[in-house]
Length: 454
Image (cartoon, rainbow, N blue to C red; front, side, top):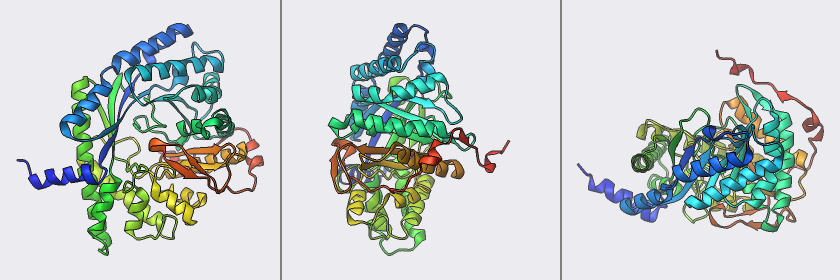
């Protein structure tokens, strides 16, 4: 039977509390496109994507219209391109041609982003991996929809510090190539430790080699819903607080489950996972920072923030796994600075620093996300920040990531406007002391002792 109170509650969550399905992401394997001829490879990639995903946008729009549930983004993720292009690509320029093909295919089917211009190099780089990584700055500067991710570490393999050093240089070069757009190219580039194969969220989405030929993954989001629920239990005990978050996460995840199953049925593509991450937007009332404030800290960054975030992340996951048998991706709370007005307010108030954000990433879903830093930050300093975040992920057996934006021509005190879901961000200060001698070392940091579990 339909419980009309619950139906009305769902309607309120959608119309007043910013509940939405943040993305339907179709993962597509390109392994069957591999060819030693570059032109043939590009033609196969374009044909595979445009045929498999031709109805993705229409299906998402139809579901949103019929069920009254906003489906904000329709996206595609593909097999890491360094694996697909290895036989045909002899120079970074060859990988740029593949990026242009991905962009053209994404435009043809109407998605807003396509992820998978990626490489997995947690233990070392092949020649193909390195060529693809060196192609990133030009690829991201010449495309609109292509997103790139590089996995440089894992709990089982350690951290490839050669790749970390290279990524510091690549991020800076990407910033320079898109300096006329406030270094926007870096917003489409993320560096991972323990990257999941089924993440539907950009810029880190790719279709892992453990996945099938095609799959539907859905990311739901509802920080505004959680905040509203917590307003009803102000001053209550931690037990009441936790139960409220769990129940709310359950309801949000059920909405995602409905959309995922319906999209899977209509597209004839298997359902993969629900990612129940609390992903904020610049919209007022759609902020993870505001949830932390509701839990009890004056601003994110105040003492107690890491504990509050740990509680939130855990209860979101506990509620979500009861709502779906297939929870995956990142699943938890995102803390991007530019995309969360509450985080921006905390930075501007002086409560939130880069170092405190790093501490918070020990207990949240991702890592240092959408953080604008001075454009004159050195490549070695960027690499050092990446290395610190990768170490947190490796030792704690969790996914961590870095999406830094060194904004060329801007410094601390300036504000950068990215627009849309990417929002705006104050340029944050970076520790000025050098780590150049550390980053200059070659090789890799070995895996921690607790990785040996066979």
